[in-house]
Image (cartoon, rainbow, N blue to C red; front, side, top):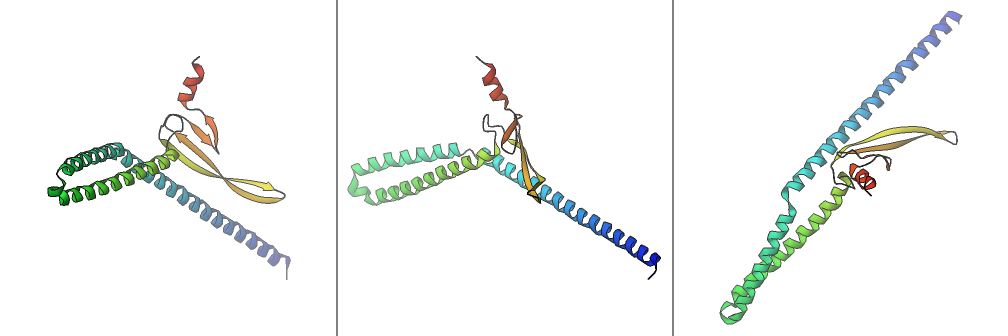
Length: 181
């Protein structure tokens, strides 16, 4: 085999390696972009759900149910005065009361769960909504092995910024507390 054939074979191998490397890089970049876009859509969806949950005002619903429970208890008290005539009506009212109490407890449980979920999407100090949540890949070497990790960056409408659990920009409500005597 001549040196010229070996030279061209090596050139072709290097070129093929570079092309394969470029294709793999483009695949990884497109996958990363797809993941970022999916996370943005999910964040937008969760933001929309949060706005919808706020607009339903569960406290008003709970207050109305509590009023209805109170009215039913009063009606049952009045009907107990003439128990013989109204026994069937009392039973219906008691069933309605139990159903309303069950709805009220379910609503209170939903409110509790919503508040727990909402904690992840608002500033822990002033309640401002989350603006962005982004994840960045990080790379490093540990004991001679290459390792990958992920870094999280979160910003809120008030200006609070958190990177990997560490506040890098403070909430204005905290700054106001520190400046006052």
